[in-house]
Amino acid sequence: MKNPETGKRVSRRNGVDSEVIHAIPHLKIISDALWQSVKIRQRAIWKATEADVRPDKTPPYWTQRRATHILSGRVFCSQCGGSIVSVGKDYLACGNARKLKACSQNKSIRRPDLDDIVIDLLKNKLMQSAAVSVFITTYNNEIKSQSSLAQNAKNPPKGGLNHDALASSTKMVAGVGFEPTTFRL
Image (cartoon, rainbow, N blue to C red; front, top):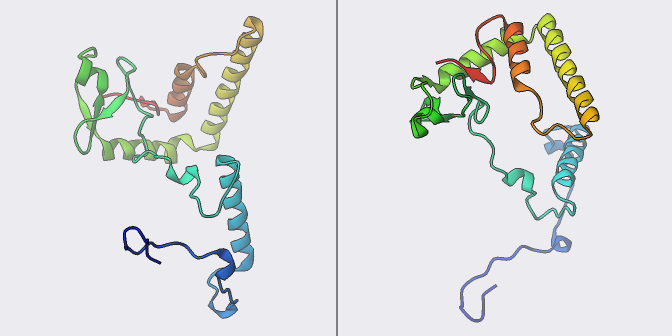
């Protein structure tokens, strides 16, 4: 179809009523049960992100920007507690030391090396049944203590979890001098 004002072709989607659909069962590559379960899951995701789901509109879930690297926004300096930021293509360093000169930690670490360390710790140290039970106990105790503090003060906790207590328990569980949310350069 051409636009009468510009004379250029304008592409428009055909209406749903003009679609021709034929079932061709011998070309199926997945089962009907799997297809239906995936469609149910997609609808649940779409409903969670957008009240009125329209099939021709991409839901916000797919358009959200997600972290490129596994540890983005999850690593903090062991000296000052500041964020660890990218410095160069493959290196991470303390943002306070680099930009503000407010931290004495001026060393950097390669991102792949840190990723390997964290993944290795998660696989080999933290996910052992004894370590998981210690972590769960510590986590539950922290939640209980914060809820009792909140009830006593009649105000919800503003800072969230006590990350220092959780980090120290995770360090104890892992049995090494490495905290999942902190690395020492």
